[in-house]
Image (cartoon, rainbow over all chains, first blue to last red):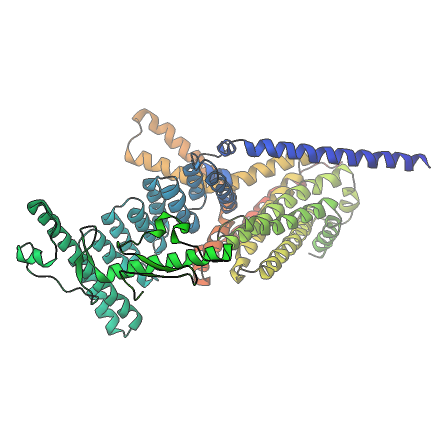
Length: 345
Length: 275
């Protein structure tokens, strides 16, 4: 063996040993790194005001890298503490670097507004986006959604949705949200005006799909309006008479309402077992959904155990109870289930 | 001009033999390709990340190459005394500087074109990423910006050592990139002055400050003008790109500024004692 070959062999062995040692150390470092709290790694974030200057013409690149960093930060904490102390700062830097970053604005609504429970800050971000992208409908739509869903401020939500509808390419469903908000706020008449206007426009342009949707919306709003009025009347009755009426007609007889309104879906209004007034259509719809869920559970049980449950109690106490105080008619041989209160379903 | 082209051609041949060039080119291509991995780490921004990283990489690496190769260009010939073989021939010094500049610029343009080709092939082959012709605009502006940066490097190389030349070019480059910030600061200070919120005894000092800043703003090359990457990546159609990102005055601006730097370089080199 020549001297050179010998030296090379030693070097090769050394190389392998060092490489293995490096790999081992890398693993140790990684374990320590992930065990650390994520916010520490964000201490190096520059202030948003000077970030564009520091980027020196590579604002988009830095915005992208910070965006990836934000997603990792959010994802990491979402799986652990679900507390995001640095998320606003990260968004501020990203928006300072790229004020036209649409997806980041939309994500701020979810991450800051809903997840970090700071909807006001998220609205601030969305407003900033709206300033830079005045033709974008998604930003005011998201702001409206945030105001409606997270803040429960229907008036504020309506303002944002109205802004969204004024933008080009705003889809039709956004227009229908405004009357929905009016319904939620109890302003049924205003909601009906919006729906009626939408219906007339749909008829004018021969849009049968929208026409059907508006007709359904009108019926649902009328139904909600009737139920609100009837339930207010029954509450007043209970308060004054100190008992629950046996039938809905008693409300007319005692002068709490002038007449029983017509149920717009073709059903009837009745006093349900919870002593509230409900619609038979709503009840049927609810029971149908309940039955579908129950049947899915039975099938899943069958797939897991290769037999149907002996009784519905095997699926848990919640599902075993018929929601309208009736009985489930269940056959453990076939797995079929029906309700005694609505046998046709 | 024949002599200038001969020097340019030889400079080009010499430059493309430089190994540093290939190492940087390989790094640039790796970085462009790495945008694929980074793109996967985002949500719904695959397209944007690939384009941003690709365009920024092409820009950064072409600038690094221009500075690295440019700063040694003339000094090394003076240092190795190979310059005597050239200037002993009937070649004027301005022809030598211009030839060197064009040769280096040609090398850098070839490198940019290669990186751009890799970038466009990557875009064309990546699903979910749309190729648009207007991505050529930032590449074209990159060529223009590099004509100024190369002229800077050649100018400094004509009278100082590579280290100092590199430092000077880098400072001028950074100043050029911060030019718009300086412009915004001047506007802000002027507005403060007009609003009358500055105490009377400080007004003169403030005016002198603005005057000096204004001179600096006008002297240093505004390299930020060539940065249209953001507008192009955000733009949705060609008319939008043209309206927000295209400025025909940038072509003569790049030409005049490069010429200005070269004339300064030639002036210094002409008066340099090479004996």
